[in-house]
Length: 76
Image 1: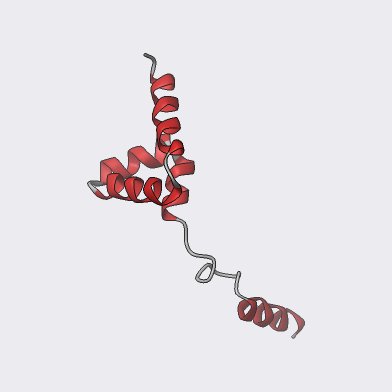
Image 2 (image 1 turned 90 degrees about the vertical axis):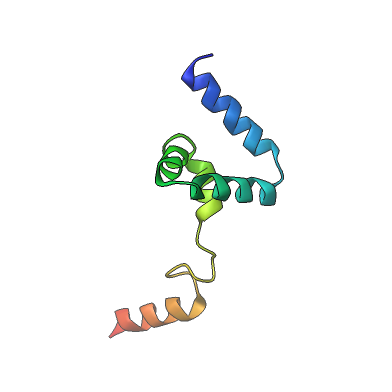
C-alpha cells in the first residue's frame, strides 16, 4: 500500500467516526508527543483543525462587542 493510500484510509476511518469521538481521538493522538502532533498537522490538517479549533466565542473578531469596537475605532 502506498503512503498516499494509507493516509486516505486512515483519514476515511477517522471521518467515519462520530464527531465527538473523532475529536477526542485526534486530541489524544496529538497529545502523546510533539512528533505525533506534527504528524497529524502534516498529513491530516483538516482533522487537526477540527480537533484544535478555537471556539467561536473566543476567536478574535467574531464577537459582536469586538466588531462594534473595531468599527468605532475605524470611524475616529
